[in-house]
Image (cartoon, rainbow, N blue to C red; front, top):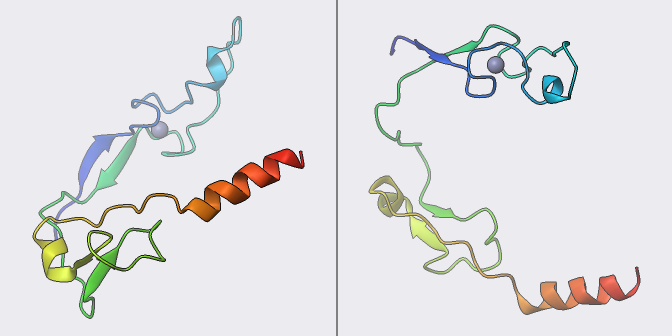
Length: 105
Ligand SMILES: [Zn+2]
């Protein structure tokens, strides 16, 4: 088990308050950072390399459910070696349906 390290909250840059809310002119009130709940830090486990998950044989891109052929799918061995599945181009029927629906707006 790795010891955790304390890192600055990337959402608020360790300020503990949200930047968006208090950026309005003349507003001196802010809001608690929802990512660190005002602490300004996260306790994180250092990354030591990708971990293997038992029982997996292949990996697809989340937006490529219909085309489970290379390069949209890679074997799990390839994945662990650093190869990643590509996202498939948007199918023609999706573009067609999108254009049709705009006509009805
Ligand atoms: Zn924060």
